[in-house]
Image 1 (cartoon, rainbow, N blue to C red):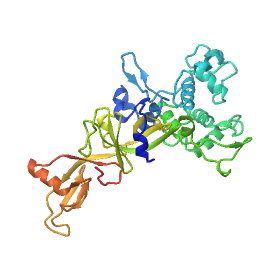
Image 2 (image 1 turned 135 degrees about the horizontal axis):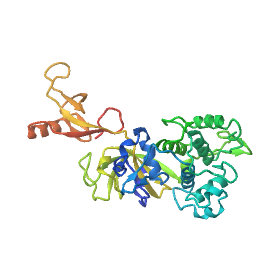
Image 3 (image 1 turned 180 degrees about the vertical axis):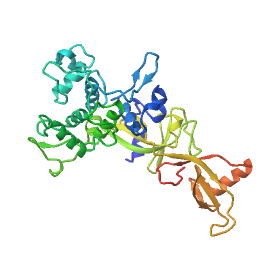
Image 4 (image 1 turned 60 degrees about the vertical axis):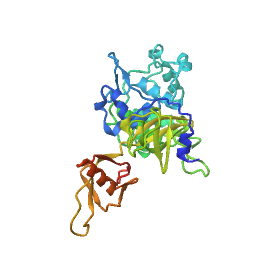
Length: 371
């Protein structure tokens, strides 16, 4: 079954939709670093890291606020629980730390301790409100993936050195903009979690890691094992009220998508700001779309056809510009994108008596007009 047909056949049970346009819901949206945007969107879409409600009814993301140990425990539990947050209620009664007995995160903490993902400061103290450094978070994410703490040297005097070495090997720190010895800000913790989604679950014989050695062992990533999450790249062509092609979605609850060469409509709502954008469709267990996440790769500009060239090798052609940048000199029959030719634009300009403002989209960033 093709990717588009699979998406179209899904039961579209939306867990949570986060896209660039939804950042208007965060009162502090402007503070989120653009390089953390996709990670923040994805983490919210799969219910691992959400906004913080404020007393005035708004919601902050608080990108610069640091992740606390209790919060890290919750995020890891929700990840390993397939994106479902049930409060870890079955674990609340078995928490062993005296400072967590009545803590909101007691169940999450008990779970993470039981699986050796996060240890206490002592046998009775967990320190749930303490911040988590980048290196500490890396250790948590590696053990979340299935790395054996003792076997990998993630304990003892050299634990930080060993964690950093392995974290770098699997690109956990890729794209982060903070000192990993410092407390991890929320937006960069999101980036690290997103990076961890791509880490392959390790295979051991005893305490010896044998990744890539055993024949017939199919590698599986963290996102595939725990979230059963797959992603398909797509382009949002239209909603009911906005379109890049002139064809609109048939209802306000529908979105027209292009996946590869296939185009289809899904029962899923996105904001008009995503039209013309390249997105990732996050699909859970081949059964439901968890979210549509903007990648920020689309380039948008105004499309114009200039005056006819009267001399030279390009005589009788017309300069075509997008966003002020010339994309070439074109003949009247040349197709700019889709079925739109230079002559189409000239005809419209003649009727209007001036420029016609077409919006052009270079979705894949290759400096050619896609729509």
